[in-house]
Structure formats: structure tokens, C-alpha cells
Length: 264
Image (cartoon, rainbow, N blue to C red; front, side, top):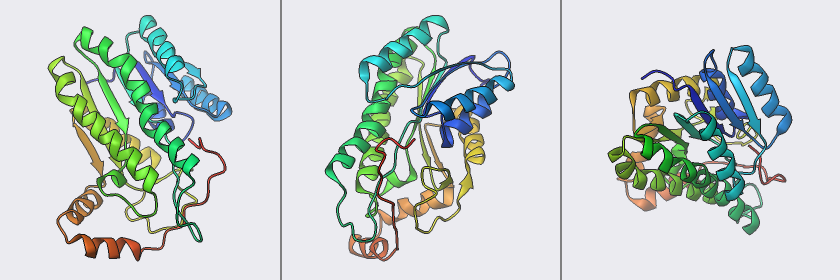
């Protein structure tokens, strides 16, 4: 499957979203990019334009359902969207001296990571189904495969996103639309660079973007990588829970307390 000519990416101002924008940018490609950091978003757009893509940008909070719907519909009216990547997201978690997450942070993590993705998917899914084609990708996390003691809200938000995409998949597939769940492991981005913990098989954002694009073009429903790490987390589901709980509790993790609730 060749790259679609009209692509929407949320969370394009940094991390995997930015790397995907750079990967897809080419002559003949129209890209609509969103992010909360206008300066970084414009840097992404400038680099994509240098590669020949036509780029528009918007600084929109994905929690704003009405603005997201209006933005996506306007883009689709101008150039029917072939690929939408719901990549906006935040991290949060526990650290030294913090045994519970701030309730406000918990609610915002879920609102951004889960509801924000739904606000991206919903305005577009019906239009893609009417056309009988299109691809939607949601950026989840390998951490959604097993609730991690160090980041309860993050794990919950990504697990919910995985379940939502999985639930939509059969209905959309019957209409010719693909929805893929992306579950990356540790990626070297600003989003998690300051988190202190073991990061097995960590890779660059550019490498992650290349894997995601290749497997989206292959039509994979679930894109979990690195495969070894994904297999290990799946395996924990088969082991006695008391043992896995003790093993995870023994791992030292320190997630900085976030002062910015939207840190994509």
C-alpha cells in the first residue's frame, strides 16, 4: 500500500508524532499537523515542507471535542484524509515519596490519551466508512499490555485506547477502513527521557516511525514492538499474579512529577 496523499497527525510537535510526520513528508503529500507547542510544531512543519510536503498546522487541545471535529472535517473537505494518526499523549506516574498520583493529573492523562484519541477518531471514521477506504492509527503503548505499578493512569488510559480500537476494528473493517493499534516499547523521546527506570531495547523515534509506517502499510491490526518486550509482557499474564506483582514492585522507577499536564 502506497502512502496516502492526505495525512493527519496529532501530537506532531515532538516524539513519535514528529518522527512520523518527517517519515511521511514527500512531494505530493498534504499533511495536517497538530500539537500544543506552537514553536516545536512549526519546526516540524518547516522540516516537512523542506521535504516537499504541503503542510498546515493547528494548535488544538485534543480534549476539545468541538474544535477537533471542526478541524478534521475542514481538512477532509479540502483533501479526503487517507491516514489519521492519533498520537497526542502525555505521561505521568509515581516516584520517590509519591505513593498516589494527583487526582487532577489522573483525570487529565485519561482525558488526553483516551478521550483525545476518541475525539480524533470519531469525526473521521464515518467519512472514511462512506468512502470505503482509509486507515486510522492510534498510538498506544506496550505498557497497556500489563498495568504498570509506576504509572497507573498512563497504563489505564492506553489500555482503554487499545480496547476502544479493538472494539471498532470489525465494524470499520466491514466498511473497508483499517484501524491499527500501535504499542511501542521504550522510545527515546522528550516524553520519557527524564523517567528513571530500566529501558530495555530502547530505540530512537526515527526507528520507531519506520517500523510503524512499514507495518501500517502491511495492514497490521496490532503493531507491538520490540517483539521480545511485547512477548515478555504477554507472558506475565500467564504467571502467578503474586510473583509478577512482586517482580514489578522490585523495579526502581521514578517518574518526575509533572507541572505541565499536557507535555506532548
